[in-house]
Amino acid sequence: MSGGRHLPRLCALVCMLGAAPGALGAQSSDSLFAPGLRAYKNLEFDVAAWLLRRDVAHLTAAGAPSAERARALVYLGAADLFRGRRDSAVAVFRRLVMLDPRYRPDRLVFPPEVTTLFDGVRLQTKTVAVEVPRDTTIAPDAGAFDIWLIASSFQTVEVTLRYADGGPFRSLYAGPVGDSLKVQWDGLDAAGAPPPVSRVVLRVASRSPTGELAGIVQLPLDLRLSRPDTLPWPPPPADGQLLPERATSGAAKRSLVGGLLLSGAVAALPALVGGTDTPSGPRIAVAGTIGFAGLLGYVLHRPGRPLPGNVRANQTLRDAWQRRVASTTTENARRRREVHVVVRAGEPTTIQPRGP
Amino acid sequence: MRLALVVLATALTAGELRAQALRPTGSASFVTARVRSEVPAGIDQFTGPAFLGQGALAIGRVELSVSYLQGTLNHDGGSVAGRDLVEGTVLLGVRALQWLTLEGGPHARAYALAGSTQRWLFWELRARAATAFVGSAAQGYAELWRAVAADANVPEPFDHAQGGEVGMILRMARAPFSARVGYRIDHAVLGGGTRLETVEGVVIGIGLSGR
Image 1 (tube, each protein chain N blue to C red):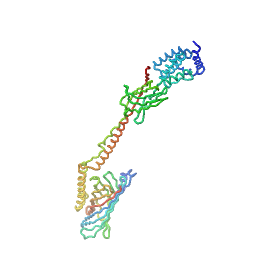
Image 2: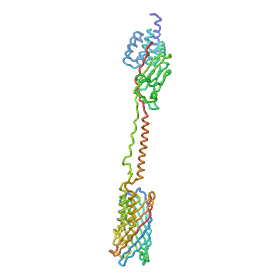
Image 3: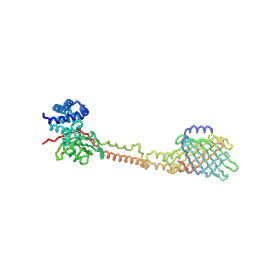
Image 4: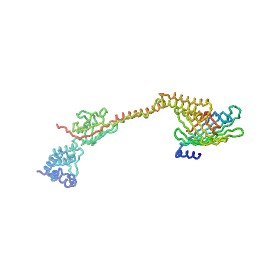
């Protein structure tokens, strides 16, 4: 083994031991890949690479959090770099960038060789992370479904919604993205109508500056249309609220009988109180007047006669009911138009194009 | 008797006077009065027009009513001088039912003759029933009264007296005015029937009621 080959390892050793022992301890708190990390710290990079590669495979298979996998990957890349496997280190770092475009190696832990190589790989790797809320309800003309794109480096992206079979549903954005970008979807299809399907796929395609497809991130979106309940129809006026619109026989009979009784009382009053020899003329005149009033009342209140006052009162009630019906109709029509789109986002998947 | 009337009115109206609005009414009527006085010596009969003014003040179910009648009556045969008739009542009543009012109080009557005045004073109990019979526009009423005590400066002792009135009141739909037509009669018996006094008349008038 030549002295030139050992020089980078010595530099790395000096940097690690002298610069950040505390930070290294903090980052190695997780014991999932502790043997590999210990070998790395002991400068046994071949052993460390073998152990870390095995641990990364286990973490990936177990579906470990991306932060854990990212930490294992950065040590694996650094180990590959220090054991002289630069291509392997580049591949590991590319994998790390694809896993988490926001990841940056701690510059207090890793020497510049590692961070420089990582930055170079990151600049060459075109991928994005897609962050969306788990559940979103989009109100018409108001709300939107927010899509945050976090780019690994400057690139051009195409953000589209597609049917489950891959057919285009709606294009949301096509253009450059530097660090991050927020794209919004108003919950409608290309024609401005609520989506006719229950599932679409959010696809973010990254392209290199030369236009080559660099990667695709897809995210299933489950859709549900939610309409507010409509109001019930107002009940029509109850029979008990409506007044009779035709006169019954009661008022007419009351007039006739009342007139007859009063007339008879006038005629019989002198006999009742004991008066004798009273002239009948004035009494008959009064009795006749009252009797005529009763007869006139019978004619005016004859059965079946329309009662305009009651008709007007009933019409007022019916008009008020019709106004309530019209108001309810308008409100229900508004509510039927007010369709909310409920979006539930699934887990993103990354598709890497095959190399030439 | 007077005390009993006051106690009866007070008992019926206790608790009704608070928080009630006053309801005044009044009327002016023309009466064609006829007085028939039958004594063993003969029969005197007088007729003539008279003015009748009536007023009432009600609060809750309690009502105080007054009336005043005045007119000059002429002898039907023309052989005897005419006489002036003056009559007045003050009655305190209570509306026992929506359509029934019970009243009591003094009823005074005087005939002004040449050189003397014949005075009558009745203490009466009255019952008055009133209800609409042609829609709400025409109200019929019937009233009966009986004297429970009387005092008159005539030779014969008082025996009994009673009277009544039946008529109709037409109310304007949107105005406080009313028109009235009725027939009234009262009959007094004195001296075991040796003296009979009958006063009757047709009443035509207009009224005004506060609302």
